Amino acid sequence: MFDAIIVGGGLAGCSAAITLARLGHRVGLIEAGTYPRPKVCGEFLSPECVAIFAKMGFLDILHQLHPVTIRTVRLTTPRSGEWQGAFAAPALSLSRYALDQALVNYATACGVIVTTGTRVTAIDGGFAEGFTLQTQAATGRAEVRAASVIAAYGKLSALDRVLERDFFAQSPLDKVPILDKGRQPYIGLKQHFRGTPLPEHIDLHVFRGGYCGVSQVEAGRTNVCLMVEQAVFQEVTAGAPHAVPRFVEWMSADNPQLGAWLADATPLYADWLSIGQVTLAAKTPLEGDILCVGDAAGMVAPLAGDGMAMALHSGMIAAARLHDYITQKTDAAVTKRLYTEDWRHTFAARLRLGRTLQTLMLHPSLLTPGLRLMRALPVVGNWLITHTRDMRLLERTL
Image (cartoon, rainbow, N blue to C red; front, side, top):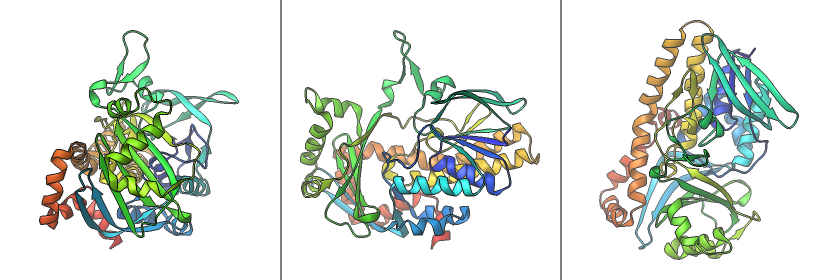
């Protein structure tokens, strides 16, 4: 019987598990995949992450992984529009291959019981009677019990269908769960390159229907990660024998500044990593008595550059509320209410702003004059940088 089970071992899940374990609780973490692993991710650790990792006791370990420092950002458009800005404090860039492994190792050292290669197929019960989780691994099925559960399984999971979350729609014909087509699902692609160095800098290149981030990570590699509307991807690649190379070719032509960098770069993976059905649809921080964190609670638009910090921070907030519940400082109803209030107060406005910026980014006719305004009035760009992140956390890194 665990005090808490965390479903998902990414940033949000590890943050929640580590926080609860350091508070003295018996914590289990169940991860469907294995470590280490590459992941479709911008691999950008915004300045707030430094404060969060310090509070977790992980900062020294992080620096041993040799992350790259990021101080400035550049935004480009297909019509050669450009804007440059600076972060109020240094950001970092580090591959998820290195970061996730280090975090789960630290979680284990903190006392978390980590199980990998295991899917959670069902969650029954609640705070009143306790939770029962059904799991499936190569060795067979098992059952796990816990007093509380945190959902940290990321953007999209079969559990979303099992939990009947409202952003999922059901196909009336084949009963296969699909995302509501009206929510404009996206496709994510990621590759590591050897290319022209971008010292202490990150580029965001806009193209029709999407945008691509380019920044260095450890060991001289450069991460290239993009998100594109599924409809645009299908339009561009229709009839092509190899969809991803065709799309990258089109994207490079649509934004010549991105194309110029890619032309002199060498890919390091045999194939691009991909993820489909990515949605920015509004979600909820609670599903029954389950506390949701990270992308399971609401995915921040990647262009805001704060998704990893929000994942880490939401895990810590959920863990703090469950600590009060487990130690009987609050009851179930108060725990759920306070966590919902915490989550909305901390993240809701930034999620809305991120989705608004996403809309502008995907319409170059709106973005180009917007960049001209940001160049003429630097205060506008600075406002966007500060309001897409938690300045209270950022102040601790200055």
